[in-house]
Length: 88
Image 1 (cartoon, rainbow, N blue to C red):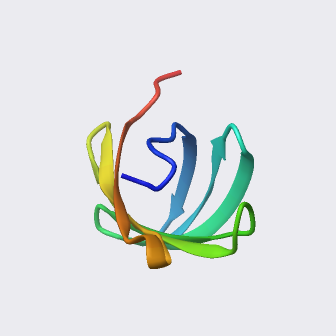
Image 2 (image 1 turned 90 degrees about the horizontal axis):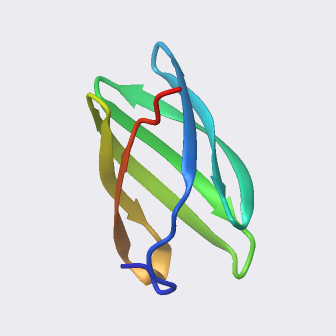
């Protein structure tokens, strides 16, 4: 788990070949990202400024409507990520 506990967010992902773009939305705001796609794997980084500077490294896998994987959080270790596609 993260130092601050579980966090809910909504992600928007778009792929074009091996390129990934999108954003994550949480109570703290929106952050855009770019990354890569390899098969069912999505990889991207987010540079966070508040409450402290840290780079989050996302390594995710998509399986149907499910998404899961790990987020490396620098000196805080890593955290599991799970989610599901929102229809609509």
